[in-house]
Image 1 (cartoon, chains in turn orange, red):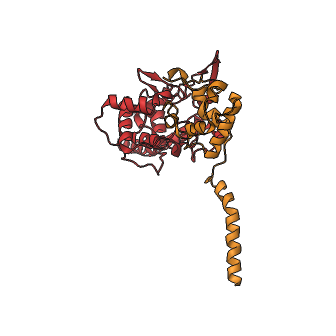
Image 2 (cartoon, chains in turn blue, green):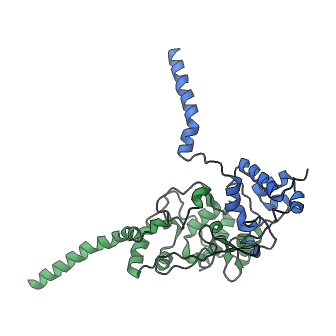
Image 3 (cartoon, one colour):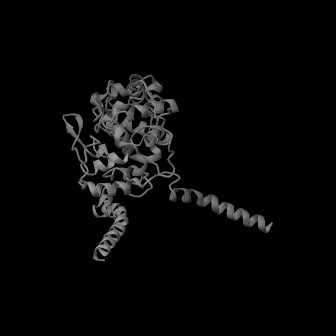
Length: 127
Length: 223
């Protein structure tokens, strides 16, 4: 009985320490802000102002979406925007020039990005 | 006797000098302060905040990434490979409401042929032990098909510029990429960019081996 109690104590300590150890060794990466994710991944096409005028925009056959347009963004549901970011434009019947960012952003980060886009367009998603 | 002694001394000098030439590359990298811009030791950075501080591409796996001949020429006379800058988002100016790259910055390296060869030897010794070699299979491909896959399907031209056809500027140009990069590394990077650079702004695609071979064969042909 004494040995079982000792083992339980060691197991509990390990479980409590595990997240700390994982973060220390870089096994679990810290959550990025939507502002930083937008700056690194989205700005190249959607632009620093989010108006679709990024440095790559002149070379695209389909103009990147203007994230500040309440009219354009209001036509999309939050689920639709989430899916486009996670799985790419092709997944929602739009241009494949919009790639899937599911490998670089977590679902949680993509949800934050959808919220950020709603702030940018000052609009709500289509219900 | 004098002649024999002279030849002996000369031989000894060559014997001593050869190992020091071989070791020079690392010392030159240090004395030229390459590490002030390039990351010379892994692992790769894992946060966007760290990426935004990057001044030049990581070199700690240069021996896996580059072709030596190209590398030795490049460090003698660098050219612009990333038209949008090393981290494009740090290098944007506004022209009206349109974003444009602000400055075309080149690497400051200007080594002599001898020093470049020594540095090239050293950089080529910096390999990633986990990269599979011999994965790329050189093959005769239909370039029109490769172009269709890359420009219509995967839209590589959204961010990369194709020779004579142009394209985006946020990522390295494809001009001369076949001379520049090791095809095994290209295969690995296209397959999983985040393995090399966890926060790189190139999306991961789910490409099968046949498509990867087609793309890398096409890229390798762009000399």
